[in-house]
Amino acid sequence: MKILQVIPSYWPATQFGGTVFSSHNLNKALVAKGLDLAVYTTDSGLVGKVATDRPVDVDGVKVTYFPFSKYFEFLGPTGWQWSPAISQALKETIGGFDLVNIISMWNYPTTIAAHYCRTHNKRYIISPRGVFYPETMRKKAWKKWLYYNIALKKSVESANAIHYTTEDEAQNCHAFIGLKNPYTIVPNGIDLRGFSALPAPEELKERYPTLKGKKVILFLGRLNWKKGLDILVKAFAAIARKHADAHLLIAGNDEDGYRGTVEKWVREQGVGDKVTFTGPLSGRDKLIAYSGSDMFVLPSYSENFGMTVIEAMACGLPVVISNKVGVYKELEANKAGVIVDPDEESLCRGLQQLLDNDEARKTYIQNGRRLVQELYDINTVADKMIRFYKETAGAG
Image 1 (tube, rainbow, N blue to C red):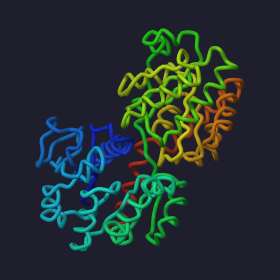
Image 2 (cartoon, rainbow, N blue to C red):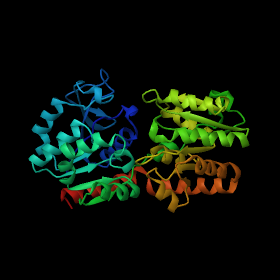
Image 3 (spheres, one colour):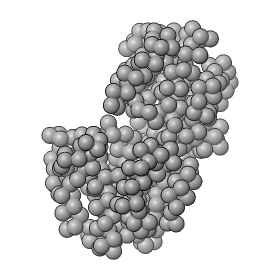
Image 4 (cartoon, rainbow, N blue to C red):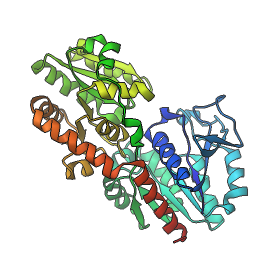
């Protein structure tokens, strides 16, 4: 069985979010299990760093990066990613694949991939990756609904199946868009081997001396409106008034100057000496942040999955997340984290619970680690995805 995956941006362009990381993570596991997989993507965020218009080996995954035009950059950092090259490649090669997996939407590569699947009578799966959440669709709603009805509706409704990564995404998005397609839920996963030998907790304090002797609350993610940083700063300010040893560590990529806005909120709340910004972290630097912190927080207004939540639990951190983070239902059912509403008071209570109750912390840590091992091990996830591919392709 030959699978083609079409995704607008790909590893190592991690600045475009968790979908890039989680897709590559899964693809490595799929290839290791013998799946014949090819990836078509663009060189967005990677100009001058990768070869284009020919397959290259990326950690064992066969990836072709195609150049795209910058004519539409007024629409956003990568524009519409209009790529005549990827269009031509799809037209010439799509017939040689048994199944096409289209990941994400709102761009030319995935839209044209669906078009050629239909014209060549090729079976295909769409993985929306959160783009159809009501909260996300209501952001610039007129533009998104216009584009959906003009360019996407037929493509999505004609898909042979929809792939969601959480139960929450399936329940909130399928009916909201009005889809009748069959769907399945296969979560994102992580390679647990990368979390088996963690850095010593002291390494974080050595890197940031102001954290010595502090209870470190870690936020790790892109700095944008969706992450709930406005309520996090207010809730932390309330916590800091009761806990002199509390410190907030904010790590992640700045998007469109949003970090400056968050820094302004920090100053206004009078907690500038209790908040540290690290900038983006990856690899060992990210593990140092996890292992040296006392708890993890993600109070998002809208979050498809929450890869950092899974990573934090794998590192033994108790987590506080909002009920708008896709994995919250799984955590709630397994008592693996504190679930809060995305508002200041609820978040403050959730953080307070972990600061004040050592027994609760231990329970969440144990349950979190067990949940990651049972549900989010990348090998388990890859097996589920292969079964889904086979069923959709009619290969057994």
